[in-house]
Length: 182
Image (tube, rainbow, N blue to C red):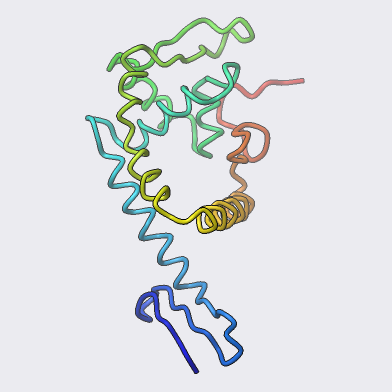
């Protein structure tokens, strides 16, 4: 039997080919690789005086539809309770990276906007390093990675009952505040 090991057994990914040349991959090993990549990506997120959660918030308010740019919208997107998310938003407002504006749709929830300083900082987003590493992959690997990660995220979100990452708002548990009554 021919085999090629990507990493050693101890909870690392092991790729083997059986006699029919079919690939057998350890799911525990793949999970270990994803965990390691997640930790590396998280550590890259400590940049420019911001924590990874603050970068996530800054990106969210830059990329989300305008009507979703509220503290509760970010909480739903992240699948977190409102308290820690509100502290993150408050810190970014104090740093001058986000600004609050009145929400014409709700008196209870301010709309959050990225300031010019926040936009400037986003040009040095540490996520670009991750994108750069992905860019070095052949196109077919990038496509396979994207499909696999999307499937993995949807599976994890279903288990955790978190919101859908594509929409950030519709599914999953509601944030502690700003739940609209119909």
